[in-house]
Amino acid sequence: MSAQVSNEKPTLNGVRIRARKRDAKAQAKYEPEDFRESVFQVTKDIEPKDYSKISSALDIAGNTLDYRRYGDTFFELLVTGGLIAPGGVIEYDEDYGRLPFCLFELASGDDPLVGAKSWNALIHKLTRRYKYLERIFSKTSQHVLENVHRYSEDDNRKLAVGMGVLISSGFLTMEPLKTLQKEHLTKDGVALRFFTDLVRVYLKDTSVDQLRRALAKARIDQLIDFFPPNKRDDDCLTRHFEAEDMSELIEVHVAARANAERGNLFYDLVDIVNDAKLVRDAAAAAAEKDNDVDVDKDKYKATNISLAKAAKTAMRANKWDEPQVVVLVWDAIMSPTESALKVEQMEQQSFVQIKRHSPVLELLTSEPKSEIALLKHIQAHAYRDPRLTKYFGRIVYELYSADVLSDSAIIFWASKGANPEGKAVFLEQTRSLVRKLETMASDEEEDSDDE
Image (cartoon, rainbow, N blue to C red; front, side, top):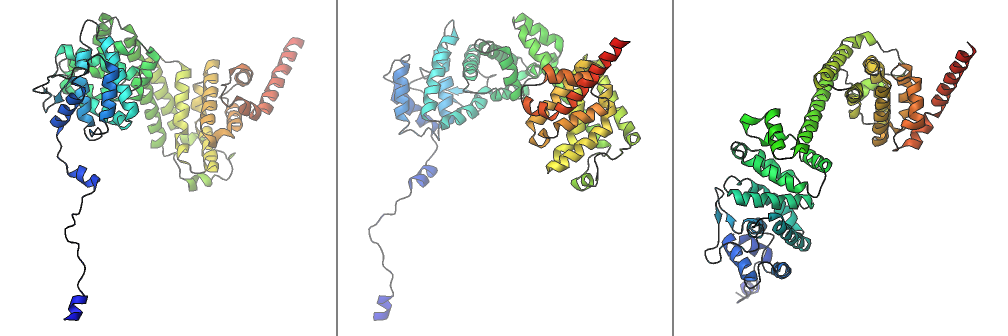
């Protein structure tokens, strides 16, 4: 009996096991309506345009309100003044109505830009204090934009102005605007109207070049995709932006279209190179014991003809000059070397590719400016890729030996045509070749004078 008592484990009577705060938050019920009411309670006694006090009140409220959990609800409130229900319907608080300092309220009036800038300042102050809200607000903006076909025309104009200010101030990227390219938003022209209003605001503080880069980075630079499906042609686009007095958008479209065509040509050229089975693994490349090995150019004649034909066809179709195309052909020819794991492998593969396809490069450098464009492009490539940096001088020599680059082009590049990036290093690598070419040119001038 005594042994049984001694083996009993001790117990804690009357002790309540408390759940960790983290677990308690996870189990708490999600109540966006309660959060909305809390925001009203915090700011109800403040004048709607007293932005300093509103900002301070929201700053302090973050200590008690769960901004991290209700960040999406918070942004919906700050934009629409209510909660966006399924279907895009905005639900306002029964007692308080619309949040008085939301975008839809502040941007009311003849000039919505004034109120939108005040709203933008409020957003920036909030996210400086609570950095995690930047990511949440950015993500939620896509949900807000997905329902623009449900908002009134007036509210859409305010939203476009507000988003334009947020993007031009650097708070948002153009990424959320991808949502506007969805079919249910483009079919009735709502997306196009919204995009046009937004870009007009964006260009007030930024340049067309910045707009072009921002659109390209977000991969929405094909402006035609914002148009209704039955109006996706160049004529409709031109008429629309001319009517809006935004002819610079036509230039953006033309440039984006040209970039897309250059990308298509590049991938077509890469396919030709790959279809010819020119890509070798490291073992095959290493089998080339000597870079001066006699490469059977006839073996690659068909491939070179295909490359030249594709390049010339694209030049005619798009009215491109040689300098624009020869750099793409170079990149395609050198694409197999990108998979090289070691510097030595890349070196071997690079010179093999040059020897195999120099006839194409020679064909596309019939003008001096084409030679200079190719030289500067190779210099930029060698500067960006450390694996090629120390071989730049030899690449220039190989291209000279293959009659791709002339002596006058190399001399001009060395004297006044080189890019600033890495210039000293690359001039040093080509010094002996340039001196030799300069001497030959000088001797030829003397001979002609004697005659």
